Length: 219
Image 1 (cartoon, rainbow, N blue to C red):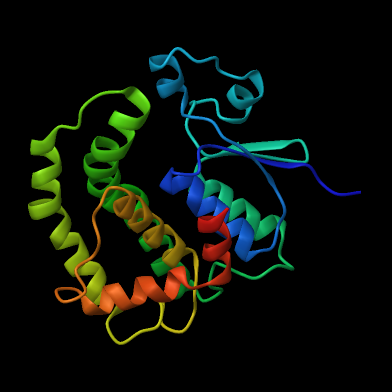
Image 2: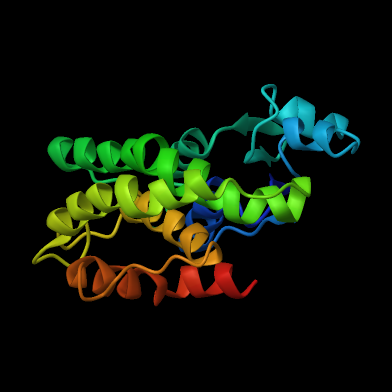
């Protein structure tokens, strides 16, 4: 008997996309329930489904229901999938030092990169006008694009230099957690300058050429 697996969250969310890619890499079937975070549902006068509230007590996305088990937060969900389905492709290295680096990049994506790419660019340029019907704060966007984001891209470009993936030869959760934010940037009309950051630009092309990414982005 097949499991019922439901992923809660809108596809444009970098965190939801992160879990989607992990599910596709592991070839795990799921149903997508498109839903905004609770704060945005309230702001736009929409109902909050009971099942979503149970799966995500903090009202954030993504949340996962897996055959009766419920859990929220993209990093927690991905770690759960890794342990729950050990016979699928591994996204976490077994080597302790490589695992530490993978977790570091996962944190860098969810904490540092998101603070600029998501909160100051994607939210202002895409989410505010399209979801909340509010104008973007152009001063915030301009500063983020020209002053705050470039140092983060400098760091990532240096980390990928001479390597296929962030951990060298092993594709991992590190690549998923970082790359997901560049889809949000693209939706916000920001493309990584291939002349200024050639290594990073080529790396992102490799990531997005993977079958799992193609399936998610075309879905």
